[in-house]
Image (cartoon, rainbow, N blue to C red; front, side):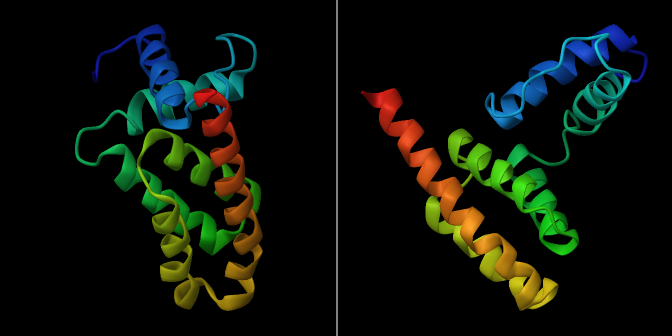
Length: 132
């Protein structure tokens, strides 16, 4: 992996990004935007493909960081993707926020309560429509 070409890292990263976000975050075609190419190659083709942590563990870390720095829309994507991949149950998504609250503060965590419930409701609706 250390000697992979950028093309190989991009291909591996695109597949990983699609798996992590279950289609909620589209893979931007290679060459369309430098930022997206670097993110796909380095973040998803490098960091996210390392063996030491699984996807669920990495998502938990990211959710803790998002809770600390803010970003309700990013939190919502993480919740929905975690539910879609089977990383978390609905109760676990709520519990992640409860666990983070004393560390990030109630005012900060309160920003995420509504989006957590929106993410769960949207995921349920999408899962129900897929089953129909």
